[in-house]
Image (cartoon, rainbow, N blue to C red):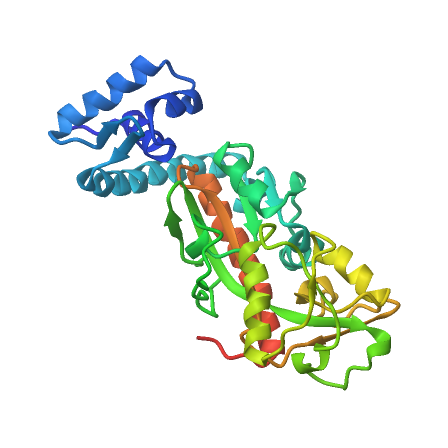
Length: 342
């Protein structure tokens, strides 16, 4: 039978949105027209793509298999169209990335993202600083194209789950970061960013990588778990491995404010390396603050690039490019720390 790309796009949008009504709104179509198009496709195929119920529409096993391949076909057609446009206009893949609406969590926007962009001589004119939870909501509402968050996909659908996610591979090739589809979102999990210890300068850390047993008498400044569950849990696991149970306080919701409080003598903090080092990995000189890498190589803050599962090929390819850029910076960090690659 002949393949109609438009009908495939319709069915893919229904799968991503979970029903005709939300899919029709996203596609800006009348609901009867969309329903008829999906039904027409199913009749030609000879099997049901979806089950219908009060909770919406869910793909059948056959529908999932068919639509996975359909997405490959749709993305391939979009990539071919994009290539023709690039050849005609002389533009590059970097131009696609620069046109997208990208959001980053505050600590990522403060250090890691600028380092990755600088290394590739790329700018993001439409970048926003958005919290992790709000990023996922805005991606689902199609208000953003890409999100960069402190999470890995395992706990994406249940952020309050107590079990620790498995870390993604330590090595990710440029533009070849694997894709994990979880529900209506696609994730590109990246190697974790090393955590560093920040203490008041007067605390007197010994030279070299720090251990956590020296902060047992200090208040550990953190943030409520619901702000960034997996990043919060990464700190908890590092403390557990060290056998340290300091008093924890949650006065601020981001690392930059916590560092200001640490410099004033309010306690200690565990923060991603990029928030306390410059582009060359050297500690940034901050009055009243002393920072050290941790001796624990497993103390890592999670990181992923995320987009909608029904994103266009241009968005998906840009996500891969951005993930590759970030993976390059993270790989350099691990090499500096002497951490082996998997």
